[in-house]
Length: 258
Image 1 (cartoon, one colour):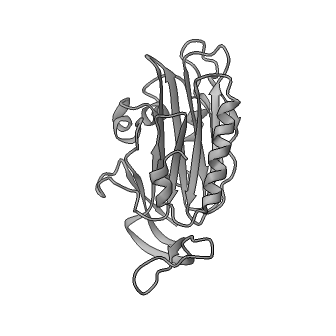
Image 2: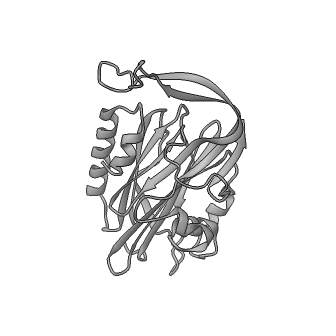
């Protein structure tokens, strides 16, 4: 599946769920009306349901018309499960498809954006980031246009603006972390006395669901994404295992109180 290395780090997600998501992604791309198409597998490695809060596409630079359309629309993603979104270029549109989905749970907003364009060959970019709940100004997305100074474009398009070069790439993105102050739910892996994971009858790690409480001094959730191909993936996880940035980098690490 897309982003296999990341998928391997998501403890507790059944292999059958990941395999089904990959099949859905491939099937969606077969139904695309354009070569400018993308399918994103979204791995929810947390104890919270991710519900789409906003989803849509940027308006085009040439005629200000919508550039993309959904092949598979965003849907809620259960805890420790995988969802799929897929998009393609609208026939007759310009040479870009830029879209995003803002998922929300009890604690945070999970922002997944993608950019597919045809310039000396089809190129694809993806971004995944975590923000405190209701932190993003989603009203800006309702009038989201091609102005490169607009923050959604800065976040998605690699090299555009202060965040693009760090958070968006045709390869694996730098992780984005979220510090939590308060009580929240998390899944912990049970271990044997020798430190190995306890496995169920399917050979999958056994998760213990716990109530956690922190003072906000460390990362409790992290997100990352893999892009560059027609199939891409984004992930959010309730550990700092995926985060590769500096704890003091406030452009990547955000805090929230629950």
